[in-house]
Length: 455
Image (tube, rainbow, N blue to C red):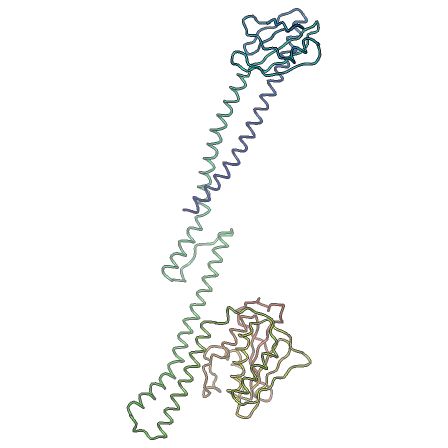
């Protein structure tokens, strides 16, 4: 209601300004017309009096005019007895003496303002005619009064019309606001929005609908993540609890070898829980969203990650550049991209047998990590990037199943594509493509749709 009142006030103010301006211009125009008409009437009356006097006739009297003859000496002879004489101005006396030119002036006679015109007579002297302004003033006042109340009525009508029209225009906005308040109160994202038209309000409704759809997807993904996480956490927690309860019941009665095995299980499962919780938090919070994309050298990022894994694991990690297709700077978030390379190397080291190398191939905007593991079955090439996915060949290998899912989310957010396949000669090839710096990917800088590309 406040918006409707404010807009109506603005419309009324604009209408008042426009109507008042039009009224003022009309008043000025009418006043000018009345003044011109008075001037023409006085001119005609003066010429008529001169013509009648020249013919020896006396002009008929009029209630709103005074006519008199002014001699060269300044003597005044009224043509209508009983009237007050018009004051003779110096210019009027000059016309009477010289018989040349004419003179006009405004004078006051008995409290009434007259417009006067003085012209010479053929036989000497001059005729001086005066026209009362009372009639013109009356017309002017009546017109001013009428145009004032007409303007006020027009402004009131414009305000009323604006109030009614705005009520109709804002009705969809009120319905949309009511629905959004209901959604906010009930948290029911499935609440339908009011029908959308083709105007700006309809576009706003469509925008709200797209926003609600995104919120529904986000909520569904969060619920799925919670369900998957609870399922994945249950196994290591069960193992930890069982081992701890066994130690509690045994109270030092276990063989050293059995106790050592249980403690090893506890440490292993606790480490797995720590990794799983850390990756879950990283996946749920998307902590790289505030990082801005910039030009990133893939070769430098790959060498940094390779050096860390060499020192951490003692494994051979090779970084190989394609000289036929030299690496180019890509558009990405530096820390997020480093996390992707680390995850790919961690995945490759995990599935590669001891003593076998892991190779990182770089060409253009593509980075590929090749391991010497069991490879990826054709039906699993897409599924390996799903959260918590563990293929039949990798069920016995420790891991959270979130590393490649994090890679997918980061690369998709930077408009890139991911791929996974079995390499010729064995092992898996997993990697990504990113757009060169200075151009967006096919789906824009923040594309979220899953994209796949064969390597």
